[in-house]
Image (cartoon, rainbow, N blue to C red):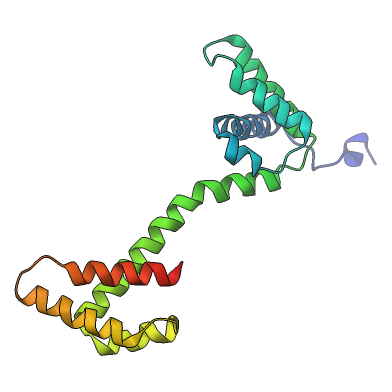
Length: 167
């Protein structure tokens, strides 16, 4: 057996290590870019929290800011960054989730206006707390407004009612 056979084949190349360090530094930049309320939701220890707060105070055009980001990346090497990454992903995805919910409610509303009682039955199965009679009345008003080319006041009311019921 040679000395080469005994070495681990798992060792990472310099490039892989450098890329991992850059990823940690980018994660640190995201932390620095968050507001105070969002930072409170991120699970991190006091040392890392202090380093992030210091980086926020340093002028971004100065060399000290770059070095502080490198220091944050160095601190993160010794920590489990998975919970931090998950918390940041959750914060970034809130807007996308809200937009998806908005579009879902719009589709439900359009479906209720177009198909009437059949769509209302499906919505009632999904949201049993809604009032069927109110939905039917608003649906009929919305259809009537569509036929008369009036502004969609009832359709807006359906949307508001669905949004209130799903929150």
